[in-house]
Image (tube, rainbow, N blue to C red; front, side, top):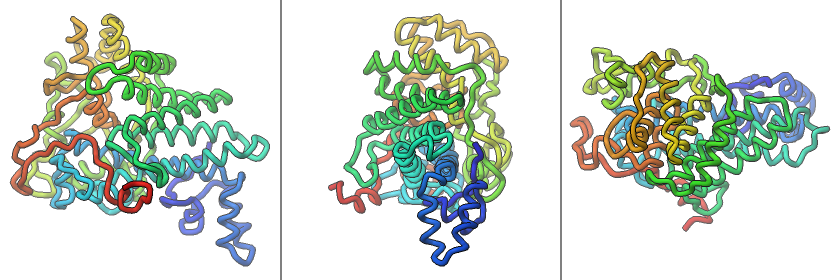
Length: 449
């Protein structure tokens, strides 16, 4: 399926008109529309019909990809992967975990392509979610005769909409959906699960395995968050279902978010902020990471020998992403295997969990993990109250799962609340874990008190 890049945040119709970029079908629609007298009205009608379905699905994908690397960056700053190295005071509240509903408004309102080093989360991810949901509803109302490859387009929209909803459920304490009432995070995750289930059903009507496996990984990840809460298994049946989904994902599978050197909204924001702008640094926990006494190549952070943009914070640079065009995995086999290991461990199958860990060690050139009791393997796999970099953190470094893992497993945030924040800003580290519903939603949504 041809992808269309560089779409506007709200509508693909603005893209063709302003940037002149689109699929052949989209550009043909534009050409036809310009031949009549009221082009804006005709363009809107044309781009809301069945013929525009591929264009609109691609628009949702493009907006998700723009939001995705920004999400990793902002949630990673809050979740102890990155440390702020900028002079912009609005970022300090995120870095020191003092995010309130009224504070750090940029986190809620800033777009993914603003000329800032830390994009927002709420608006960009909600935009991608809204677009995916909108085109999915239209596709459900159209027929296969009206839309070639309708089932694949529907599966794609549902899968990307599911991932957008999943990211919101893993980071916000509550959200609102399309001006609806306030929805708590577990219900948000259930909404994500529903979208992935629909994506799987639609993808199974096609020969496309990429979207099918993307949705399987997404649903497995969602079910893992629903099954394990505050570090304990809350629902064994849901955990078993997560394992079943993950076990179907074939070796070598990966679905990437793709990026480019231009324009800004197509950049890999992690590389941009850390390696180019040098306004963030890799956090202390992820420097010099070893596994069984050997340097772990999966977590690569290098002392640059200089300071960040604030002229105070030591600069440590990541090398997992090596350019502004470097893709980022959305879903892949490694995550599926880690979910299988987690579920196996919680049913007493220590052997399977240990075997999966050692498959990762072999691939990374690390010594074999000897295993041990269920508690020992669990701590190595996903951590405990101790401050350690775990197998999940190593294998999925900077791939969007970290904050969700913190909340799912009730892992400590570091430094601890009350620790003095660096002198450039003052104050202390706070106790925010999940992000509160932002005031921009609360004050503008008539269905929220």
